[in-house]
Image (tube, rainbow, N blue to C red; front, side):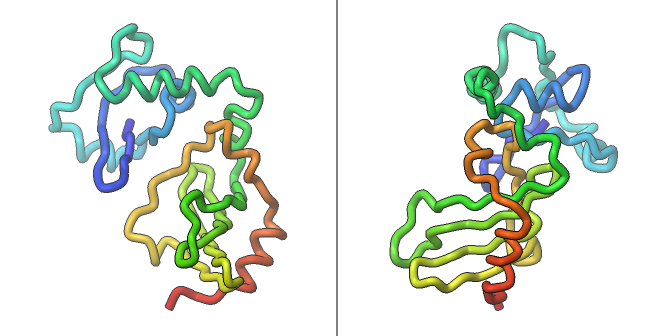
Length: 166
């Protein structure tokens, strides 16, 4: 399991019945089950955690509490089973130079596939994974996400009106 916090990550071995159980138990984590990627950490002395343990290591305890608070929300996990997710989200810190709206196309793992940044002046820039130095997954179990869900037609319209980054 990986909790990516931007420029690094918190890695743990989690003993659970399934990857889904981990995703449903801890917020904002990526379950790494690719054998090649897992093999990279075979020699590392990562903290091992049983998912049913009452005590969690620092960091993981807060992610479990966060997920427990989300679990009772009617939109919990609403986007988790979709092959493609389209979001139309306002940017929280919008000012005259920052994008004010993001259109995002996400894969089933929550990673961005394509994105459009719309600015206050009406200009828009489209980008793909080749343009981003980092692309951590978005937590598709987060019950706040469905309010921003849109459809492929809305996304594609924004995509076609936007200009390439370069």
